[in-house]
Every structure is written in structure tokens, then in C-alpha cells.
Image (cartoon, rainbow over all chains, first blue to last red; front, side, top):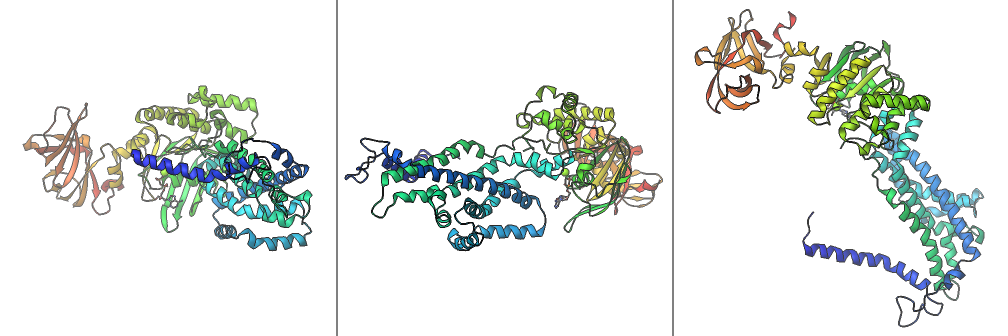
Length: 275
Length: 352
Ligand SMILES: Nc1ncnc2c1ncn2[C@@H]1O[C@H](COP(=O)(O)OP(=O)(O)O)[C@@H](O)[C@H]1O
Ligand SMILES: [Mg+2]
């Protein structure tokens, strides 16, 4: 497509405005986290602190924070592993199976992802209480797997449908049984889709607040999003430390995303089949 | 090595009939080519033999044993897919060695056999490359090597050369033929290219409209096409088909007539190959026409002319170039005539 200089300039300007719109809160978060305790609400407001300091980070990195961090890693990590494994198996059946029952089930999956968390939290809470699982990792992991699984299946199914079936047929002619075909051919080729799905589950579970708040009752079991609440006290909000913690919460996810970005490009099937 | 037998094979996709009552016996070690236009059911036949699709009805026997209920992986056959179907995450060597890996053949043995198979298709230098880093012809060779690395009962090849350029296709064709004779493995080869079929096949099966039109050796099919479909499909350009009528031993056409002794009366389609037509003086003409185009091909001139409403092709001497729209007198070799029934399209002397 060819653009005139004016349209190109207009598009660039629009992109810059959109980027600013998205990035400004992040910038503000970092800026506030570097300001001394006295400065956040100085008038006139400054975009960037005159004397940036890391003291907020030092106070924010308390032992509690470290506990929350570990909890988040355990809960998110397990949710990612379980959801992606189940979703890959389910998506493979959905993308290759021919039974009418599968179409019905896929419809159920699509509908399942439409329920807002707030609508299903009470039934799940009741089930957890019945099973005596409240205030455990297991309760959060079960909840996270159930809320992320439908979208994960949907994503992976979309990915697997595009993989050429002839590769699996070739493998079965080469003598591979169904498990072998799945493990040797489907899993390696699905890697970009698996990574994209894992990133999705990670982002959802890492920032999840509602379940984490409802299902955990002690500080020992809290995850990061709930932990941030510590800075919001009855008499005021410690913005500097809150923002410093927020930065520390965001950095791992952003880092993982940047690191995995190149795997998200679904170029792995190049050269498999003609065209 | 094995015989393959198809008995009353049929395949429907919903209400659509892709194959109808197919019967075929393939000999051990034979190179059989399934030839037909796109969509006639060639790949469907192949996939049913391979076990990738199930027939709607009918039996498949490999080596005399019914295999209808045996899954593809246990049929001990190798297939070269139309789109190659190379594993993109494996190197060339791993691709070729994959069937052996599944058979749990030891690493040393496996590597030796991979090298041997790769050498047969001249790919031994590229074993560490990935399919994405290969040209179309090289991918083709890898697909072939993956098929010959084990000793299957049967080779299935679905238009394996269709994606190559003309020159490479000729080279690979010769290699394939040589390889097949060397390995003496029964081979079923699918193509829509009649030149490929004529050059490769021991026998050709011509398919059209879900049915077998003719089975025979290439020379036989060329010399005695069983019906107007085969006549109009084989040869380049294919046989000319001219509608007319036989009355008292004379073929009558609006532009002329010719003696055809012993042919019974009736409406017929006359078939005559372009190379059996020549340009003659007006007083010796069998039929009269008007030149539509004249192309010097080097060793001959290809003349297209309208005979009445029918456009015919004639391969004539190189010096017989004609101006467009000039009248032309056509002579026909009376010993090379083919007659087809005008209503059924089948060859008239079929029964003889
Ligand atoms: N899975 C399918 N579902 C429906 N129709 C099919 C399917 N596979 C093939 N066909 C139809 O069957 C006919 C024969 O197909 P195919 O055997 O692939 O032809 P070809 O001779 O070109 O290889 C075609 O008309 C095709 O559209
Ligand atoms: Mg085909």
C-alpha cells in the first residue's frame, strides 16, 4: 500500500498519541516511585522528580513483599503449567476430532468464557469452602485454571487448526501411533501457540485480585495484587511505596513478555508444505 | 513388495460421489500411474490405499490380505505427499530418519541408512539443513528419501513433481523411474500430467468422473484410446475428434468425405492424431478447412484449422507454414483412423 506524505504523517502522529496515552500511566508509576515521600503531591506537579531516590524500593521490598512474590510465582506458575497442558490436549481434540459431540462441547467452552469472574466467584467460593480448600494455593490454582482454560483452549484450537494435517498423516504413514504423532509433531509445531497461551494465562493470573482477595485470609497466602493493598491504609495511601511495589510487580511480566516475543511469531511451519 | 487389489471401491463425501465401483489389480513391482484431470478422484484413491481415508464401500487388499481395518501406520507403505509434508522442526537428516526412529532402529544403523537414502537422491551434503532452507526440488528429494529409507511394501506418490519447474521435472522423472526399477517396489503414482504418465508408467489407469476410463500400457492407450475422453486427453495436442456419419462405407462430413471400408453405418466421432494429418493439394483433399493459426515448433509446424465448426490440430512438415485465414486442404492417413460411437463415446472396434 502506498501512502502520500500527509497520510503517513497523520498515521505517525496518531500512533504517537496512542502510545503516549498507553504509556503515560506507566511513566507516572515509575516517576512517583522515584520521588521522595514529600514530593508526589507537590504543587506545581513535576513530571520527573528533581532528586530521584530508591528509598521507596528499599522500604517496599519488605519480607511480606517477598512472601507475596513467592506466592504469586507458585500460583501463577502452576496455573500456567496446568492450563496450557489441559488446553493443548483439549484443543487438539477439538481441532482434529470429527464427532458432533465435540462441536457441542466447543460451544460450551465458548459460552464458559463469557461469564464474568464476579458471577462465578460465589459458587466457586462455596465449593472451596465445602472442600475445605480456602486459604490454600490449591483453591487459587483451581479457580485460575477454570477461568483461563476456555480462552486458552480457544487460542490453541485456532492455532492448531492452521497446522497442516498432512504432517500428522505423514507421521502416521511413517509408522507413528497417535501419541507419538502428538508428541513428535504436534507439540513442537504448536510451540508458538503454547507460548502465546502461556503468556496470556500468566498475565491474567499474575494480576488477578478478586479471587485472591476472597480465597486468602492470611498474609502468608496472599499474592502480589492483594499485597499492594497494604499501602492503602485507613488514613492515607503511601503512594511512593505503592508505586515502587507496582513497578516490581510489573517488571517480571514485562521482561518475560519481551523475552518470549520472538517466539510468538508463528513462523515455525515455514517450509513444511508448499505455498 | 506386494500386489495391490481394489475391489468395488467407492467413496462418497456427503452426497458427492468421488469414486464409483473401482476395480483394479496392481502387480508386484509394477509402476502404476493414476492419470486424470484435477478433481477426478486420484488423491482420494491414494488416500484410501494409504489408510488415511476410509472407503464408503469396497475392499482393499495389499499382498493378498484385506487391509480395510488396518491403520495407516501398520500398512507398511511409504507416501510422498503432493505438498511434501516435511517436518519443519526437524533437519533433513532427521526427516529422512524419522521412519527408522519409530522402528527403534539403532542410531548407527539409522545414520548409515539415512546417508544411503540421501545419497540416492543426491542430498547427502544437506543433512543438517531445515526444510525451510531448501529449494522446491530439494524438498522433493527429501520427501523421496524419507520414502525410500525403509523398504516398504508399496510406494504411493501423489503428484510428487507437480511443484517443480519443467527442467527439474524432467530430471527427477528419469531419477524416479530409475530408482523404482532398482528397488523393484510396487509403486502407485498419481499425476494429471500425461507426459509424466506416459514416460513413467508400466500401466496407466485413466480416471475421470469418479470412474476408470481405461487401463493399459502407455503405448496401448495411445494407440487405442477406449473412448472420446481418453482420446481427447492423451497426446499433445490430443487426438482430433470430428463428428460425422458413416454411410455405405464412406465417412461424410460437411467439408468432405473419406472412404472407410468395412465400418458399419451410423453417427460416429472420427478420431485422428495431429501427426496423422498432412496438408495436400486441393484435388487430393479429404476435408477442407480454414487456417486458424500456424506455429513453427522447430521439428514441425503446428497448424490449427477450422473444419466446418470443429477446430483441429495438425502436425505437418516444418516448411508447410500457412497464412491465417487461408483455405487449406487436409489429407488424412486412412490407416490411422479411430471411430467412436457418437452417442456413447466408446470406441467402435472395442469388441474386436
Ligand atoms: N474431504 C473431502 N470432502 C468433500 N469433498 C472432497 C474431499 N476430498 C475430496 N473431495 C472431492 O472429491 C473429488 C476428488 O478429489 P481428489 O481425489 O482430491 O481429486 P484429484 O484427482 O484432483 O486428486 C473432488 O471433486 C473433491 O472436491
Ligand atoms: Mg490430488
